[in-house]
Length: 158
Image 1 (tube, rainbow, N blue to C red):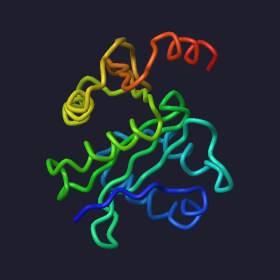
Image 2: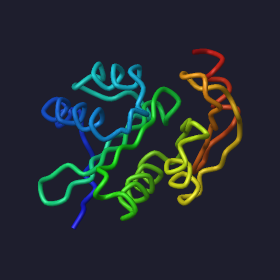
Image 3: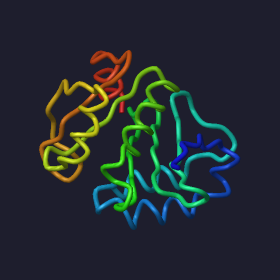
C-alpha cells in the first residue's frame, strides 16, 4: 500500500541524499541540474511560501517524490519509480499538492508525454508554449486557483 508522506524541513535534512539519488536514478534524465541544485540548497530549517515536498512510500521504500518551490514558479518536478508508474502514484502526489498548496505551476517539455498525461489527468491546464532550458518546446501548466498573471509576473521578475 503506497502512502503519500509530506516531507517537512526536518525530515528533508535526513532524507535529502536519498531523494537526490532517487531523482537522478529514476528521473529519466529529465530533471534539470538546476532543479537538483535547488533541491540540494533548499533550507532544512523552514520552507519558503508555496514550497511543498512529499514522498510516496511503499512500506518503508521510497517509490516516488514530488516537489513544488514557490507553487512551482521556482521549481516543480515529479519522479516515480518505474515499477510504480501507471499505478496512480504520480496522480495521488499531484492531487495532494493541489490540496496542500491551492495552486501549482509547472513546465513540461512537449516530448515528455508521460508527464503531460499526468498533468492533464489531474486537471492542469496548459496556458503558454515557451522554450525550456534544454531548448525544447515546453508547455507551461497551472492547476487549482492558478493565474497566468501570477506566472507572468514571476517570470518577468526572475
